Image (cartoon, rainbow, N blue to C red; front, side, top):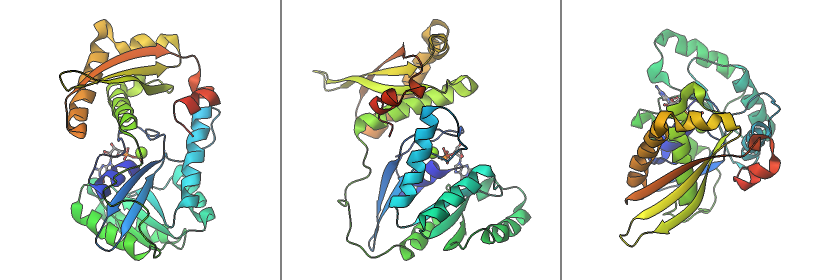
Amino acid sequence: MGKSTLLNALTGQKISIVTPRPQTTRHRVLGLVNLPQAQIAFVDTPGLHHAQQRALNRAMNRTAAAAALDADLVLLVVEAVRFGAEDELALSRARESGRPVIAVVNKIDALKQRDRLLPFLAQLAGRHEFAEIIPVSARDPRDMQRLLEVITRHLPESPALFPADQLTDRSENFRICEIIREKLTMELHDELPYGIAVEIESREETPEGQLEISAVIWVDRAGQKPIVIGAGGERLKRIGTQARHELNTLLGRRLHLNLWVKVREDWADSAQALRQLGME
Ligand SMILES: Nc1nc2c(ncn2[C@@H]2O[C@H](COP(=O)(O)OP(=O)(O)O)[C@@H](O)[C@H]2O)c(=O)[nH]1
Ligand SMILES: [Mg+2]
């Protein structure tokens, strides 16, 4: 739907990972924007999904619902010109939060039939008393500027809650794991196992001034291991190279990355394993 893309575009930083695949975001991720007249703390969340049995899925739904309750303002991100069952679910949670809701109608750059936009906006206006309804493209910096201005108008007066130089609440290790998971998701496409997670095993400064990271890619069935590794290890190598390139830029230093694939049966159904992997 474009929530994470929007967070990155609004903050001007890669804070949350983005893939074409739904349910990529699993955690709540804070992104901070400091303007001359305001500080905006955005919370990116997983999308809401209709109840599924798996513990990972339920945890993601809880994370998304809880974030709305903590916020002063809710942004409901919907794609032009679609409004489906999951948008309905997100709107009802936003409504329950009792907070003002701004509807952000995203991806207007990809909309071919421009004449469908106005009727869609009118229909949306009938669903809820939104504080604003704003069509945007996350790819257009002017739209992002305008969105920041509108959001600022609807925020309550408050002292800044975070230091002006802070970007996110997430650690560097968390961001490293997420970038690896992004590359896994892109590389594996439809073969991506639902139960896949990344964890840092060790982190060392080498005498040459490089950062050496060993990370474990957890899968939850033994049969998934060869899929991730690929013939002759080619796939895992590509994933590692892509992650390393991006991390070199993100961290502003050279990184040595070792990836291991390990099996932990059914971790996505285990509340304990989810906690260990940092999922609320
Ligand atoms: N054309 C276009 N694509 C977008 C825009 N925003 C997001 N996307 C794409 O939509 C897909 C899902 O984005 P993502 O931010 O991960 O959605 P999320 O699951 O709601 O966080 C990705 O492939 C993005 O590149 C936009 O404004 N225009
Ligand atoms: Mg996301």
